[in-house]
Length: 114
Length: 113
Image (cartoon, rainbow over all chains, first blue to last red; front, side, top):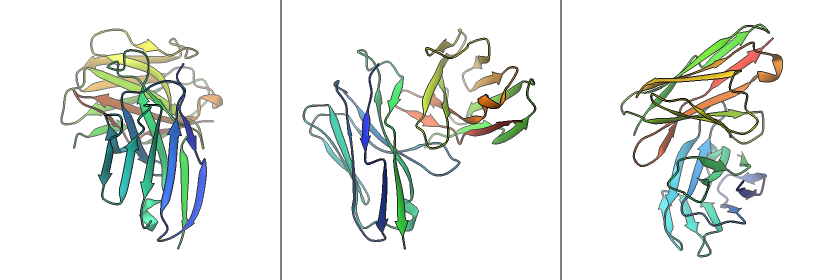
């Protein structure tokens, strides 16, 4: 099946630093989604991207849908302690991407040193 | 935004017993719900897709007789782990879809002793 390769797997940064993570696939996705998961909780949608080349912001978060439709990145500016968690990229699986199943990347675990 | 709840949030059971987990969409109707399993430090793995009023569709490798899914109404889906074993211990997360996106529940931590 389709796979999403997410990197880095983990990041250890100082508070106030900017963060960048990315997600790649060998197949085309028509939608890219970025989620954050706090410990012991379900994922929460941060940003959804629907168009190749699209650049979307949500506060200090910015995500882009790669023009090849095979990659996406998420940036976090001026990190704060509440940014700690696991970030997942995801996309609809299958040729019929109106089908609703999501495939997830492996996640990027963000740790912030105060 | 749309809210999805799960009950219980955590459960401990003995090996060989069955456990039922509920997933509810609180403020919208969901024709489709999904069940995921997440092991420590791993990603979410889809177990099955649940459509209201019909049988669930299970992913390859997921035993349908062990993980019973019932989607009896547009706001409720249940996952029953039958004859649970320690290797079934995991974090189970449901999601419910409206027209536009999936909303995830807070998860249920299952520990089988």
